[in-house]
Image 1 (cartoon, rainbow, N blue to C red):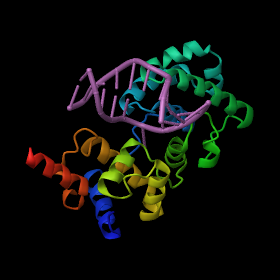
Image 2 (image 1 turned 180 degrees about the horizontal axis):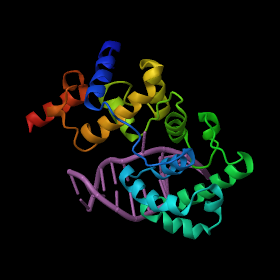
Image 3 (image 1 turned 90 degrees about the vertical axis):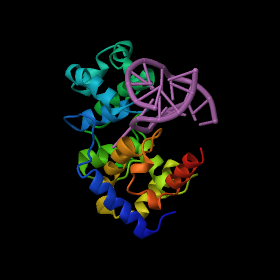
Image 4 (image 1 turned 30 degrees about the vertical axis):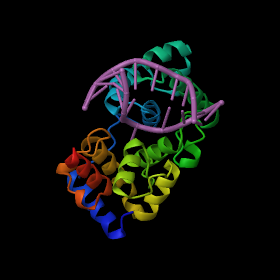
Length: 218
DNA sequence: CTCCCGATAT
DNA sequence: ATATCAGGAG
């Protein structure tokens, strides 16, 4: 586990490497962001943007999503993967938006997670990106980076990872740091190729040092 | 814990 | 061929 000083050095480095880290899911309003994040489960942002480009032309409102048969919506998002669950959730979510929310996307995590297909991570992204609520959404990248670098314990589940990060990072930096960690994970410390040899954080990264040692032995 | 799942990188 | 991708629900 890293010390507070080491963690702040990491945050500074993230900022130097990715000063303009941001949400890469294309969207024009909070409702489109909800749909985009829901679709992004176990799928790359690039592919989501490819699909939502046409999707958001065809479907503008919750009413539009429930006006078509489920099978049609499934086909419209099929290339995303997990498309049956996602299509079903989008229609259920649209019904809830109309029946209970007056067509307005809620601004708090607690309200957002009540929507079908919206869990803690999606709720945090929407609250943070669309409404400026301080939050740290723990996705696959944030979890991997937190564990490799030692922001949390290896065995922590996503809830524990989020708690650890919220405890160790100043609240006014939650949202920025969250995006920078995603960029760091997506473009530098990748799942399959961490690029330790060129990493500015190698000297304080236990995983990185282990990796380098293994490589040297082989 | 398992299942959902196509596209892409390695 | 296999791992991974801005996870969530049962």
